Structure formats: structure tokens, C-alpha cells
Image (tube, rainbow, N blue to C red; front, side, top):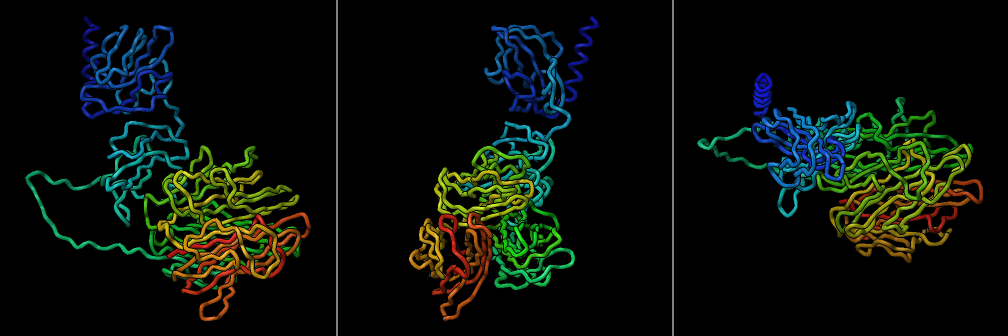
Length: 606
């Protein structure tokens, strides 16, 4: 009699706390309850349950799901337990144990099985393209350095929501707004949060609801959002006492975001941006970082010349998401100042959740065995385009893509630094280090990719503990943008370098016979080139022949090797406004340029 009274009391106590819908793990046959990756929402009067059973063949397994609180008062030892919702939870065998609990996901443990560890990352919803965040019923345990993300995109006029784990550094780069607050540009949801199952809501938390008997009609004039073109380019002249490099020889400053007096770019409009910065040194070791609001953002440029009379240079790239008034600058973190350098930045997209844009880095001190560089640290990834598990990017659609690759070798290591598409080498350069010294290389170019084309950075023995080995990419929204990429196939000492292997030439502006790009569509353009030298000094220069007849020497980059069997690579980036008839070439000022490792690329920004 007392046992029956206690059973009734247990049932009543469970019923009293289950008025709010519980979320329970829901699987029919798992090795441990906590390995279940699906959840269900319980009906009123139900609790979370876990059953341990032995199948007819002797194997044991766990069933988890919602169950009536009344069942928790019974001693379960049945050969078959039927589910209330579907036959997938049918248990064939002997139930050895039944335990109940009240609390979201509390049935991750029970019947002797351990639950989630105390120290772990969050449990996040993990679905792609559902009609509403609440439609997701799949979960995933995230790493301790990850947060939960929910984001929205529009396809064929229909809103779809994706939820997943996101790298914490990427979330921090997003300057996350709290749930319920819309972004300044557009009304698409894009939120990170920390806490189990927090990424199931994109609706404003305090949105007003209107009853069925109350109707209010208002008339408002929509405020148009103007997309601003933003781009700047400046060259180095001085370093402030605090270490910030001031590039005050400015050529372009669309949007007026860059201050040549302070060396700081302040974002005039929220959006996705790419930055390029390079330094050169004569006999000094120099280290610089790109910083966002005073914090290093994961990429750096390092030069480590092999003698006091040797020139060396280094270039790096980064894709970042900026909010209005975010500040970007280049800072020196070494005792020596660079001799020269450049700083460039341009907006690649407004705050568009669907835009392809990322930078990833190699972040490990140990060596790796594969030929592909195992990039494993996300600096920024707008839509999760880069696949960490296989260190590659797969193009989601056909179009033009900008790809930047940087790499550092150290301690007598050397190997090609390759941009590979579908396993084939498309772009190549070659850093060559000596014992006790480092050497870096970089390439930046535009490619025409088909949907599902796979892009990787390749090369052996690249170091990842200083943030100098990175892969960046973004998609150009206008697929008919004037753009070209050409490679040098043979060594040359000619005054003007004729990059004769053309792999992209959308508008026919580049001439492989002369090495000249002739502007047909006026606009703001970016040009980038990489020059490789072997055993000698190298200096190349981007020159612009104006349609008016004047010659403009835009930018010089240097590289040097003192031994005939060693190589050095240098890369430049330049932004300028062109008019119809303007001609752009790469000039060989000093030295011989190596074929197979040198390239020239350009595209219209706006």
C-alpha cells in the first residue's frame, strides 16, 4: 500500500513540473544515451526517459525519448515497448532499466550510462536550410572554442535558416548582435550565441504582438540603404612611436575611410572587406601585424633577410567583416622598421550572409605529412565556405573568385607554394629559406571557377605558428567583371614582362603578346603581381601609361638572393582609378624573372 502511495506521489510531482514543453534526446538504438543526435519536444504530461535493453542477440542498447510520467512509476520489464509517435523506437528485447528525469536533454545519462562531461563546448542545433529555426531537430556537440550560430538566406524568394557550430574567433569577428536585434543593413538573421540549444530563434525577443481584434495601419517611407564603394591604397613613409606604420603616400581613398596622417582605416560602412599589406627591408628582420580595433587578426608579414645588404619583402592578406567605425591598421612588432611597404583595402560585399568570403590560417607547431597545407584556424568565414576537415574550399556556384595564398618556410626548408584547383596546379611561387632564417611568399589572383570546383593551398613544410601561412578567398558578385590572370612560362630579362599563359581574360583586356592590360571599362581596378628571382637582386614595378600620354610609376617591389641556387619571391598589390585607354604593365627594373613562378592578375573593383 505504501509503495502505491509513493508511486502516485512520484507521478504527481513529475506532472507538476512538465507544463512547459521539455526537449529530450530521441533515438532508438545508441551505444550511449549522450551519443544521440536528435531531439523531440514532449507533450504535456511527458518527461524525458532512457531505457537500457538487451536485444535478442544479446547486445545491449539505449532508447531515449519522451515518455508518460505515469510510466515512471512502473517497474518496466517488458519484452516490447512501443513508441507513441513512430515505430522506429520499437524495442525488441528485454528492458533492463527505465529512468525518468525532468529537464532539457536530461536523458543524456541514466541506467548507468554517463552523461555529458562537465567541461565541454555547447550543444547546438545542426540543420541546413529549414523554413524556420524551430524546425530543426538535429543537434551536435561543438568544440570548446566554438559557439552556436543561426543564419538566414533567401533562395527563390523563400527564407531558409541554417544552424551549426561556428568557430569562436569567427563569431567574435562578427561583432555579434544579441538575439532579437537586426543588423544595420538588411534584416537577415546572423547570430552567434553561447549555451546549449541557444541557436533556435531569429525572431525579435520583445516583438509586439497584435491581437485579432486590434488592427493598426501605419504608413512609413522606407529609407533606402546606399551601398558605398570603399577602397584605398597608400605607401609607407614613417612609423609612429607606438609601432603603428603610417602609409601616408596615398593614391586612392574611395569612401574616405583611410587617414594618411594616422595610418588607420576606419570603416565608413559595414560590410565584408579584404586587406593586403606588404613590407620590404634592407638587412633587417621586421615583423608586422594587421590589427582590428587594436587586436591582431591572425595574419602577419615577416621578413628575415640573410645578410645586412640583402633586400627582402613579404605580403599578406586577410578577409574581415567590419562594422561601421571599426579600425584597421598595420603595426610593427619588431625592433626594426621596414624600409618601405604598402597598405590596401577594399570592400568586397555589403553585409550579405550568402557572400563567399573567408581567411583561414595554418596554426600548428608540428610538421605535417601531406602535400596539401592543413589549414586549421578560421580567421573569418562568412558562410562556412571553407571545409576544415579536408582543408579545402568548394565553389558553391559558377563565377569569378579571388584567391590569396601566403606561406612561410624556415630553417633550410623550401617547396612550391601552389594554388590547386581540382588537384591541378594553377598558380605557383617558391619561398626558399636558409638555416636560421625564414622566407615567405604570396600569390593573389582571380580565377574562373565552376560550381563544385575544389580549391586548396599546397606545399610541404610550411610553418603555422606565426600566422604567416594563410588562404583567403571571396566571390566576385558580378561574373562579367573585367578580370584577367596570366602566368610567365619562361625566364625573362625583358624590360616589360610578357606573362604569356592566360588563364582568365573575361573582357579581352589583357594582351599576352605585349603583357599589357588596356582598360576598356572605366572604373577602380586592383592589380597584383608576383615575381620570382634566382641568385640575384630583383626589382619590378607596376607602371600605368595614361591615355593622356603620361607615365605613372605606381609601385616597386623587391627581392634578392645571394646564391645562384636559391630563390626569392616578391608580391605587390596596387589600386587605382582607370579610364578608357589606360595601359597597365609590369616592368622589370633589375634582374631576371623566373618563369613558372611569376604571375600577373587584375580585376575591376567598382
